[in-house]
Image (cartoon, rainbow, N blue to C red; front, top):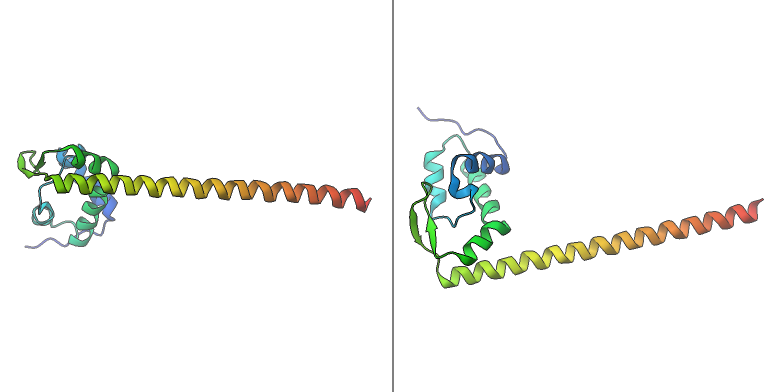
Length: 136
C-alpha cells in the first residue's frame, strides 16, 4: 500500500524533519544525496516539497557557516558520511558573503525609503501649514 503525500508547505516539512533529525536541527553539513534518503523514508511528503525544504535549509546562514568550518558531512543518524572539501568550504564562504551583501543592500534600501517617507511627511506638514496660514 502506497501513502499519498500530504500537502504541506516546504517550511512545514522542514520543521517536521528538523524535529526528527538532530543533524538538521543542529545545522550539521548533510551527506551528499540525503534528499533521496529522505524521500524514501518519508513518502508522506511530496518529493518536490521535501527537496525545496532542503534547499531552504542548505541556503540558510547557520548551515552555510557550518559547512564553511566543517571537515565532514553527516547522515541522518548523525554518523560521518563523507568529507566537506576545501572547494565546498570556499563556496559556502562565498555564499555567506553574498547573503550578507544582499541583506545589507536591503537594509540600505529600506533606510532610504524611510528617509524619503519622512521627507515627504515633513513636506506635507509644511504645505498644510502654508495652506492654513493663507486660507484664514
